[in-house]
Length: 80
Image: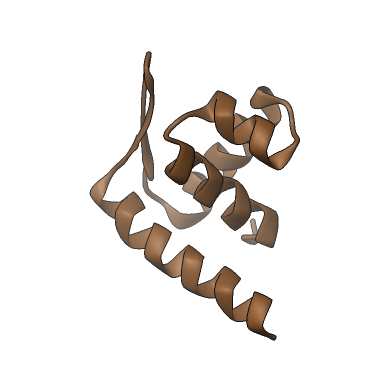
């Protein structure tokens, strides 16, 4: 599977909101769609990026590193 821009945008939204529900509202998709896309992203990179809890989502160490790269990628595209 290829990583697409939507995967990065969705991941950044979940990371910044620390909530799948709030991130789904932010990116205007159903929570189930967002969750599926994040799982696909995790499968593509081969590691868990988020710890899911009853209270939301928290970055794993790999997720924190990936967040930096995702933000840089999106910012570079915005500048272009």
